[in-house]
Length: 172
Image (cartoon, rainbow, N blue to C red; front, top):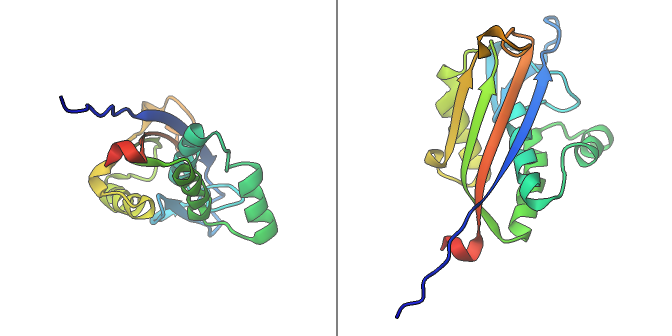
């Protein structure tokens, strides 16, 4: 009789949101590592990339090692590292240290602006490249929220991220 391999996945959710900077501020909007034209950037010490922050928080949900907050603030304020990819790389390293591999990433965004449809494929490819996944393993959906929240009213962007991971020995 052949030995059956148990394969299970673990899921975690992450969230992040930021308000837009003032219209006269030249800070660019960055989502998933992609610069979005014709829209103000997001308020925050870093580039305020709500997608990468939500993903970082989801990974922290698996590793139980928070990156955003004290660690990211130190990198940003004391070392001038404002690229959210740096924070995500720390979270990914924690995941590898625990011998987990990401199977799938799913994002949902609520924002009145910008219209994300023209950018979705580029953002999926960017996140796939950062996480060493295939674009088919990364999904992004967006909604305006019908104006029911401040995000749906155009005052900022909110993102939720769910990840599925498996132990490395189970994914082979």
